[in-house]
Image (spheres, rainbow, N blue to C red):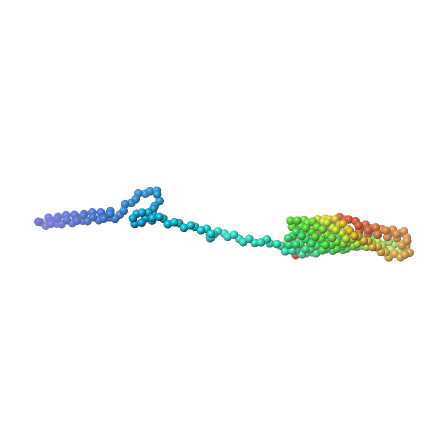
Length: 262
């Protein structure tokens, strides 16, 4: 065998062995790679065992909603009803027939009830040498529906009116005086506005109904002139006016009421 023949034979054997080895490797890879399943719309099955059977999926645990979510706001605690404190104060008023009065006031925490202790004094000069001196004391209760400024109330008190008249009779200045005392009831209604700063402003209307009136008369006239017609007329005028005032029912009005509550 020539050298060319030997080389040709060696190359042929080498190529044949290389081709056979590649065929063997390709067959081994095909056996190891499983066939790819065609795509379907069914959900994938999980939990297969070694034999290929489908194992039951684990039962899902129930969810509990007892605890609120982290971002869920918690309800604020409900507080009880809050009440205002009672108010105390003073006031002054201008009206008729009790011209000037002052008082101490109490308003309950609910703002539906008010109470006052009132006193007043006034004196003035009247016509024909007449002087009038008036004093009064009173307790008052008020009901404010809906805790509003409007109220209805009732007062009970006592007033004293002294009417004094002087007249010259036969050269003597005779002074006659009637002192009238009477209790009274005073139904009324009005408005009192209370401001945050403490100031209160109001007015009221009512009726003054006297009861149990008495009239005392006194004079400085000497006996020498008490029988004259001038003195008789003087005494009658003063007594009649005193009795008339003591028995007369009068409209009552407070034109302006200013107070301070604290």
